[in-house]
Image 1 (cartoon, rainbow, N blue to C red):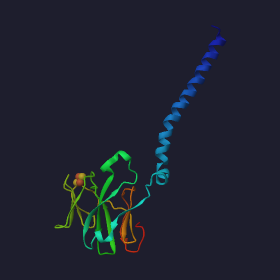
Image 2: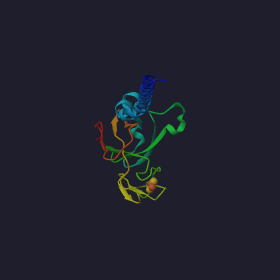
Image 3: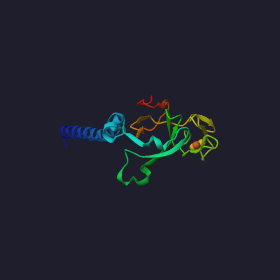
Length: 180
Ligand code: FES
């Protein structure tokens, strides 16, 4: 084999290697880009921004906290009952409402409402929250997460698909629209 033939074979192998590396790089980049762009694309594509009704206001009497459920708007057909998500609705005075995520702010166990003590209690590690969702005791470092919500046409709606996150407060006055 001449030196020139060796060089051209080496050059060819280098070029093939570059092409293969490019293909692998592109294959790895696609999921990363999809993840990075998901906050922009998911809202339009899958209904993350859906307002879903939790029912008529008559189901949530003033001064009471009641359990409600909604269907996850981004559910798959095979999800079955796991697509039904529970939350707690508090009607403070018929004017102001709060909607709490059912999951404890510690590790996510479902909290239960005890009207006798006006506390939400977590069965997993004893976390407790006051009726306004603020932390009372136990391991949770913060209060219950709250949904954005609005009152419209005699119903209460939540911004479903957008799970409550830290830094958001969510009191809504009757006649208002969205909570900050
Ligand atoms: S998950 Fe609720 S206190 Fe730990």
